[in-house]
Length: 617
Image (cartoon, rainbow, N blue to C red; front, top):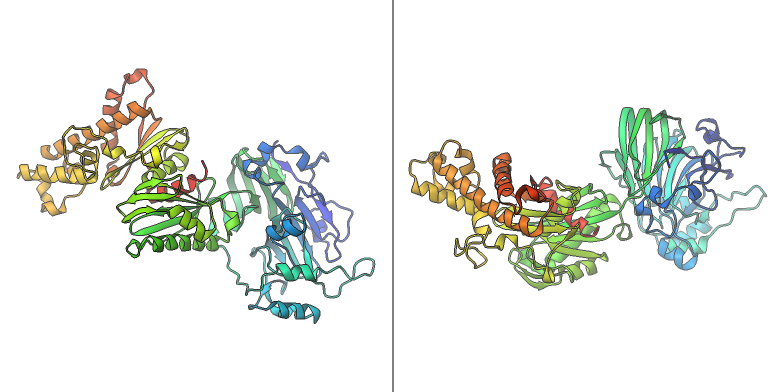
């Protein structure tokens, strides 16, 4: 399917106006025109194409995208709403209640204010906590709106309305509504209005009393932006973004989700197709680059998946909300406080996860779970930390405990393994299926990804690449063995060797730094072109690191070797000679598959992105 224009089903609810027909181009005989269902697979008003066929019967699974496959039916519905009169005060139930009592899903929605008359507004949530008795009494006395927040609105405002939140659209508002694919509404107050037959419209007070949140409502705009534009609303059913086109702009339709583009201001083009005010267009999943031009405001609705990524460090816990493309929607951190015990750390992780979710307006049902990188020997299958020197833990079930505290699925793995997965999924090795990662820091960490999956070994205790021996009976390693790669290729090792070289050569230019206490992992690299002792340190370091890399390349035959850590700041001064040695020593030389060496690019984000990626395998 190509990009196609959508032809909506229009509704003539008694409170509707004429703008959708007269200003927004809706072709219909109905009068008034209260709603136009721009993107709908719902039986009460399916969207059609120019040839009269419905989008539902035309679009394939691939064109809808794989993110839609987990739903029992198409997940969202996009509307334009013209309220000439006040809409009823109403509430929508949650999925849990609706499935149990109505054989239907509930309804979460969001409103983007397209246009509004001066003084127009919406009712949304209670001004304060109320009791069920107060709520019921206000309905009976027709004073319900006195308990509700009234927000005066203007074009460009946006309000996210979770199920259970009491609300009403006021007269004079023209709104783009993105919602769950549900038409289930409990009407609690309708101003005594009568339908076309002179009868008061049905109320659903008893049901509404069971599902309405009675807590004080606080309005907090998202205030988040992406490369596309301003994020308006996030849920498992829909992600909505305001995209401003002024001149030329490009979007990208990936294979995970379709996109629905609704023009709410101005006009322009999608490719060579003209876009007018009020038009909606369907972009199939996997379409690729979408060229936009003109002067227009688009509301883009799509289905994204979300994950909580956690990078557990000795000092800080870093976390983020990550989407299925590896975009970090929002991130934050909190102190680890490992000195207060494992239970406190678990509580801090849970609190951070809840804080992240609240910031972006997601609930527990809206995310796939928590993926977490943890230092130490990890039993990832059972979520257990067998041993972690950094955290002073032994046999702690961090995964199950965080799951208990948050109500979310939790998956954990060793932090170096997680960083490797992050680089393969979203970083420098994106597009490769198999990779080796070596982190060159205080020690040498390692991660192995084969066919897009982590190779962790028995009880997930594997991938200790830094503790493979490259020199029999060599330098003492912190693990207890001698001659490990870590004892020769870590930042600690090059600092040790630099100090030894300086002590052996009192004329070395490296003494220009002042003293041995000022030696860092880059000192020898800084002087390698002007000082023989420095050059010998660097050459020895590179030769030892190349020995380890060649071993791993011969064993695993990865498509790429990724280097991370502070030493990698040397860039080509490190990579080029390493690559030359690897090419020379690799088994079968040029007859076999070649293995490029690259520098990791995700930096401090590798852990939380890799954590999220644990849930994407």
